[in-house]
Amino acid sequence: MKRIVIADDHEIVRSGLRAIIEVNSDWTVSGEAANGEQAVAMVLETRPDIVIVDYSMPLINGLEVSRRLKTLRLRTEILLLTMYENEELLTEAIVAGIRGFLFKSDASKHLVSAIEALLDGKPYFTSILLEKLLHDYQVSKRSNPDMLLTSREQSVVQLIAEGHTNRSIGTILKLSVKTVETHRASAMRKLGLSSTADLVRYAIRKNMVEP
Image (cartoon, one colour):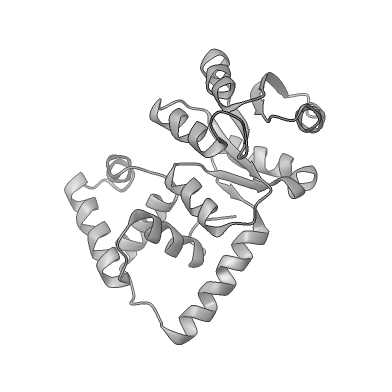
């Protein structure tokens, strides 16, 4: 039985999400939270497979909840819900290590797919925003083509965008942390980028992060 925590300050939203989740007999809602502090406490108490977190919550927002949970190195996957079509928020979410991002307006149609992807160890990002980012990238590319990255640099950039640390990337690619840092710095230099957020934004626009 896969356990899921729902964190949203509106009871009617939590009830709607619960109804969608519990149609699947292999999933159960192990707890609900009405604010950010409760969400962190509930995840620590029940250790769910997934926590669904609304971005706009009292006390601390969903993004900060996610950052706190990531520092605890739990196995819980995070699905961030938001009503805002905001590229910067998506970028910040990925930098924070969130692998699931869904608009509230899409929840009734895509919540099950998002949960299934996260349970399978795959990221899930709402397609509307990714399509917009890809369009923006294609327009930008026509006027200013990117310098080509090596295949190893592409792999490092993709793993960074998926929320992995340098040490984790080194383990996956069988490289030293120093070598990972070298590839990361080389990619940022070639692309003219100055921050991790810029690198993540590039990866999204290159469609290197799967929807």
